[in-house]
Length: 381
Image: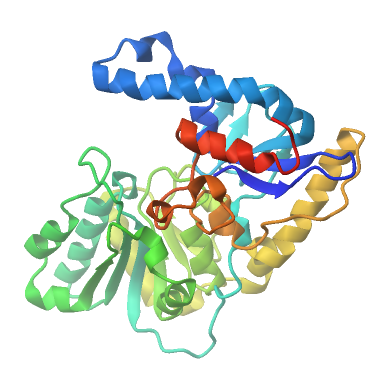
C-alpha cells in the first residue's frame, strides 16, 4: 500500500512509503525482455505491469517534487539497488541490505506492535507450544508437524496450538494445502485432542482474528516457535516476545526475526531432525528464560517507535535542507498499514469491499490512478 504519512504543506514536501512488493512492481526489471516472451497468460500479466510502470514513470517526477518517497521492506532481501525515485528505506536491521549508502530508517511494521500485545502476569498456561503463521510453504509446516509427532511418540502430552492464516487463493506451489489432511492422517484421535489447529477462513486471513484474541493465545502458551528458513521481520515473533514468551527457531534463520533474539530469551535448533528435542527443552524449562519485556516494549512498542520515526524524518528533511514540522497523518495501525494489510475508507485506491481482507498494494492501473487522484489534494499531477 502506498502509505501517505504527510501531504505537502507550507512549501515543504510530504512523505509516501511504498511496500517492497510495489517497489518490485514499479521497477523496470519487472518487465524484462525475458518476461515479455513468456506464454500468453504471463505476457498479459507483464503487459499490465508495463502499463502500470509507464504510468508511474510519467508521474514520479512530479511526485518526487512534492513528496519524499520511501520503501518499506517486509521480507528478506540482499544487495538492493536504490533507484533515483526512492529517497529512503524502512526495514528491520536483519531483514535487508543495500548497495551504496541510501538513507535507511531502521524501523519496520514489527516495531509498531499494538499495546494490547503485552504480558499478563499470573495467567494460567494452557498450551505448551504455539505457532502463529501464514499457510505458505516457507513456514515449513511438514517439518513442524513431524517434530510434534516425535514429541508424542516420546510419550509427551504437550498441548499444541497452530493459528494459521489462510489465503484467498492457495496454490500448491506456494501453500501447504494438505495441512488438515496430514493432520488427520499423522495424528491419532487421542493426539488430536491435545493438538488444536485454528485455520482462518480464506476470505479473512489474519484479519479475522483480533489482536486481543491473539494476545490471549500468546499469554496462555509457554513457548512460541516458527520453523521457517527465511523470513522478513516476522511480526508474530515480536508479538509473542512482548507477551513474555521464549522463542524457538532455526539457528541459521535468515531475515530480521533474530534481531530481538538471544541466548537468554530463545533456543535455536540446527536441523529439523532434532528440532523436537530443542522444543522439549524449551517447554520443560520455559520459566527459566529471561524475556526482558520492558526493553522489548521500548524497542518494539508503537508509541516509542513513532517517536523514533519522527526523529529519522527530521534527519531526512535536514539532510535535504528542509524542515520537518513533526505532523504526520495515518499513524494508527502502522503494523498493518505499512505492509498493506490494513483497510479503511481513507485508502481511496482500495476502498471497495473486495479489499477488506486482502492486500491493498497498488497492483493495477485503476488503483494507481485513484492513488494519484488522492495526491491531487496537495499536488497537481
